[in-house]
Length: 259
Ligand SMILES: [Zn+2]
Ligand SMILES: [Zn+2]
Image 1 (cartoon, rainbow, N blue to C red):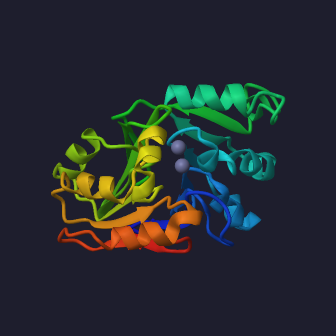
Image 2: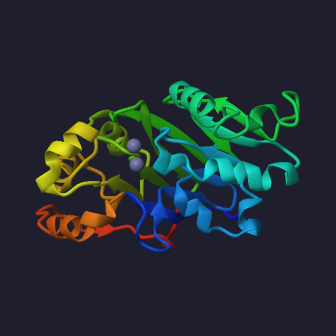
């Protein structure tokens, strides 16, 4: 494998409504998925089949809704189970509310429990998941359900995705530690006039993003994700008010980052 990895943005919108800009899903190289929102549904079959690992940050629908279709589409043609990694409360939510035999089949028991087409793997925040030369770690972030941010480190660089989050400290402590991060994807779901909603839904808005970036010492590039489409123009305008030293860029589906 080449030493560097790629992170491809399959989807990074806060909801639907803009063609080819689905909800959160990032593809690392050809085989690791971070979240499985509607952006995943843009991939053709031949790019779905090589996906081996799926890390889910939290069980909200905009981050998981492609997962039932992914396992249904590629499960039986794969020789090994599709591995789905998440913290315990997220796995529990997926088992109870999605793969429950009512909404969707329990693919962790199909065709049987010994050789299933999908395997749930519990991770603990702070654990390092080593997948070839790619090292994934997570840290808990505050949201309306238990949720994590994700770090990727490769021999040549690093990437961090905040997941869905409200204001937090541990994420920035890790970003400021000496492990290099080149790109930081940070969410901003609502405009400032809906800061009350950002607080209620445990998301960020531009003024909260500015406060969060005060904590960031690392000189990584910051890319903003998860804008609600109905307010995306307003959020972008508000983000332009940022007085900090680094530019804030808006993430879009189709972008590819070398890590
Ligand atoms: Zn969420
Ligand atoms: Zn979300």
